Amino acid sequence: MATTNASIESVADDVQPAANVRRGRIVAIDALRGAALIAMASYHFAWDLEFFGYVDGGTTGAGLWKLYARAIASSFLFLAGFSLVLGHYPTLRVRSFAIRFAKIAGAALVITIATWLAFPDSFIFFGILHSIAAASLIGLLFLRLPVVVTLLAAVAAFLAPNYLRSAVFDSPALWWVGLSETLPRSNDYVPLLPWLAPFLTGVAMARIAVFRQWLKRPLDGDDRQPRWKVALIFGGRHSLAVYLLHQPLLIGLVYLFSLGFPAAKPDPVSVRRAECVATCRQQDPQGFCTAFCDCTLNKMLEENLFTAWNAGQIDGMTDERIGRIAGQCTADAGAKN
Image 1 (tube, one colour):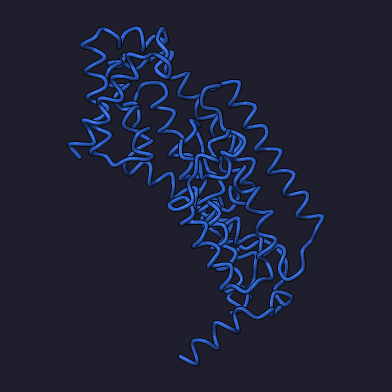
Image 2 (image 1 turned 135 degrees about the vertical axis):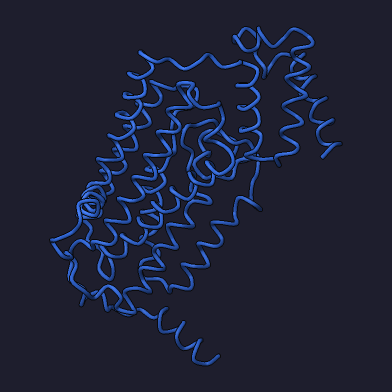
């Protein structure tokens, strides 16, 4: 036990072995970032197919697809935290950091504006780039703190939404924190909590890697790389540009395909049921959500309210009939589950 404690204290000490590591690109990090970009593109392609009706509504927001999306976001944030240490430990390069931060924050702003114009009801106000930008500022505080402190902060960030949610954070101005009781609608919502956790984990792992001198090796790698690896490395080195360009390209291709081969028109009830379950599952278990959504839609059909509601002629948030049905179905679903 004494040896273990000594090791932890050594890692926590303010050591500076990074001064011996030559600045430059690390091929493995670029390749991992490139692989994460491919995974993200595959998820966005599935989302595009769903948007144009080739895949059932709600598919990419539930089940394994939802876990896949979270794993992708976690990998980007982990690599961003890892890279922060590689670039700015033990000495913060202020100009380099400011330029990189400005690029990420500017790209995040572009995405917010573009999605607000395209999807005003679910635009991206705090997505993956917004989260990386905010986490990068916070990460500066942990660059020279003991690794144990950083890991404890990562655990706290991960657990915070489970214990600290409050109606105080329901204001749109505080949605970015991630502690609101009502989850906002957005096509990409990556709030600071719990998503600061993978970023800080990346910071801690990079500090350990530097201390152990795992990164003291040639940084450029062998020029005779297979083409697939060259492509991954290239994508990883230009990840911001690839991120900004890939989704407009993919959605454009699916749109062009839809002009010649349109998707079959989906059953509106099935679409609404899938959307209802996907939204409900963000806060409640599958059994409750399925029972609640089935009950709500069936009663709306029985009372001839569905068609008008689906067409936007009835506001589900203010109509007393919809509120009565939702309240009754909430009680029924709760009794069954």
